[in-house]
Amino acid sequence: MNKLSKVNTVLGTIPVEELGFVAIHEHIGYGMPGSELDTKWWKAPEVRYEETVPKLRKFHEYGGGTFVDATGICNGRDIPYYQSLSEKTGVNIIACTGFVGGDTALPHFAQASVDYLTKVFIHEITVGITGSGAKAGIIKVGVSRGGRMTELDKRIYRAAARAAVATGVPVMTHLAIDAEPAIAIFQEEGLDLDRVLFGHVDDGVNHAQTPTERILEVGGRLGFDTFGYETELPDPPFWARPRKDRMDHFLRTLAAGHVDKVLASADANCSPLGWPGVKGHTINYIFEVLIPDLQRNDIDEETINQIFVDNAHDFLAMQA
Image (cartoon, rainbow, N blue to C red; front, side, top):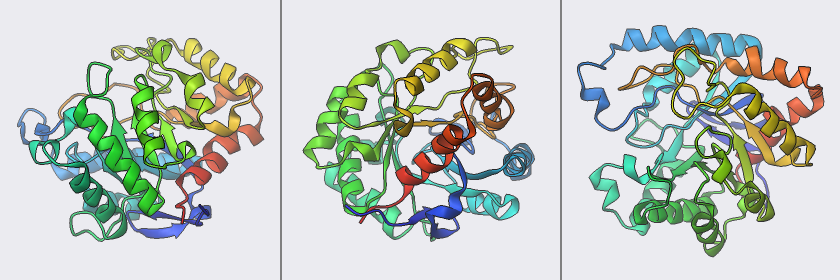
C-alpha cells in the first residue's frame, strides 16, 4: 500500500507534515461507561475546560503539535468538546474509533457481530462520528481485564483489522501481553503489522510478560506510552514503575537498533472521568521530564525527533 500524506483530526483532514511533535497516546478524559452519570464525579463543562485548556496550551508552548486521544467509544469520547479544545489551544487532536477493551463496550456493541463493528469503525473513519463531521484517525483495541483476550476482544480486533485494511488508518492497542491471538488475527485479515502500535509495553504490571521480541519479529511497533506513572509519585497507581527501570528498558530498546519501531507518550488524563486521576502526572511530563532524561542519557536530538515526529507521522499517515 502507498502512504497518503494526510491524517484525520477533529477539525478536518490535514497533511501529515502539519502534525508536528506528536504525543501518540493520551486522554482528554477517560472513564468507565456510566461514570458521567455519577453525581460524585460529574463535572460541569467549565470545570473540565479549566482542568484541560492550560495543559494543552502549555503542551503547545513547549512545541507540541498533536495530541492523539486514545479514548474509545463508551469511555468519555466527546468530539464537539475536542473540536472546541483544538480551536482554543492550536493543538491538533486526533480522535479514535474502537474500544479500550471489550470490557468497556456497552451491551449494544458487546453483542454485535464482527461485520457490524467493522461498519461502525469504517463509518467513523470515512463519514464522521456522531454527526460531528469529525473523522477518526486511528482505531483503538485492547485486552480486557485479566490479561487474556476474550472472545469479544477478538471480535473487536478482527473488526479493527478489517477497517484498517479498508481505510488505511492505523491501529493502537491497550496492552500487548496476549500478543499471539492479536498477531494471528491481524495476519489473517491481511493487515501489515507495521500499522499496529502495541501499547503499554513499558507499564509496571505487564512489561515482563509482554513479548516485545515477537512483536518486533512480525513487524509491529512498540508503544512506550506510560512514561510518568512512577513509583516515586506521592500516590502511585498500581501500574506504576520505578522511573529508572522504565528509562533503562527504553534505552535498551533503542540501543538494540529499534529506534524506527518505537513511539513514546505519557498516557495522561487532562480531566479524568469517574476517578480522581493521578496527581502530578500530565502530558507535559514528556517535555518537562522525559526529554531531559533522554538528553542526560546521551540520546541526541535527531533520535528524539525521529521518535516523536518521524515515526509518529509515518505511523499515522493513512495508506491507500
